[in-house]
Amino acid sequence: MTPQTDLRLLDLPPMDTAVRAARLRVALDTEGDGRAESLLVTKLVNIRWLTGFTGSAGLALVRPDRILLVTDGRYRTQAGEQVAAAGVAEQVEIAIGTTIAAQTELLAAATSDLESLALEAHAVTWADQRRYADELAPELVASDGLIDRLRVTKDDGEIARIEAAAAIATEALANVGHRLWEGLTESAFGLELDTEMRRLGAASPSFETIVASGPNSAKPHHRPSGRPIVEGDLVVLDFGAKVDGYCSDMTRTVCIGEPSAEQQRILDVVTEAQAAGVAAVRGGAECRTVDAACRDVITAAGWGEAFSHGTGHGVGLEIHEDPRLSFAAPEGATLTSRSVVTVEPGVYLAGIGGVRVEDSLVVTDGGARSITHAPKDPAWPSPPTT
Image (cartoon, rainbow, N blue to C red; front, side, top):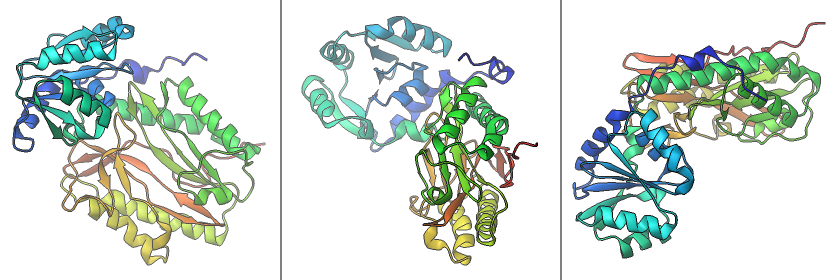
């Protein structure tokens, strides 16, 4: 299957990749006690954000004067092309090591004059940390989520890519949603939706699509099964597309046929809770406050224990990234303008079913702008007319 050319993907603004290393160096200077002179980036998505390189193996040494990108021979050509396309060729030197040992030797040579080197604490294995300690000269210090925090604030190019991915996901559901009324299994409908997103230009789904019908809809992260979708089912659809590495995320709950009184009450409560959460999103708002806005509505309806997860999360190069909109968010953690977050409360009743409604929002100083525009009517998409 060849994806069709989508004009939305041909006119995306460039990303401001060239300024990211400077932002990182400023942050590194103020990280902890400021001991780290350089940072060894090992988390692949952070390497992509910093250099444009998308290979499956690589290390990026961020020194005060340059970036050394170390990878293997498979990516010799790709690395050069992608660094140039990202506009950072003057900042990035590429070095090829055919083995782990050779790559470590390249790092040793490039760090021999440093007194200290920060590692990404959550992206280094114990074995790698011991190897670096044995073979690199600088003192190793921990860096905790430094680039992840910088990635929270998105530039225009990043927001445009997330918005394009969201538009593809909405259009895909509009195109194939009528098949929910044709007796397909959860797995078969998930395949239909994933295929349509690719046909419309997505590189891939942004995560494993959730299609949860009937009693399965009471499982927040149910994986599509061979269960047929039938009359009377609530169907939770949680899915997204990926465009140029950036993810979208949206959930809609569909009812196959007229909802029962109990189903309608769950739909109404979750929709009200989601609207309350969206209204609470703005730059400077506390993450726990947004969660409470949703949770208070559901608790007042008597289903507090049935809302079993946080209200939302950041979206970008990863489907789940900072910030976290949750009762468990760090005390005082706030939203930042130009971040992209989800608001997705849910109620899940074992043996009965569940409802979740989710939008992705661009945070602004005065509120938020939704980039997911599919209707929230549980009868949409409509069944085929006869």
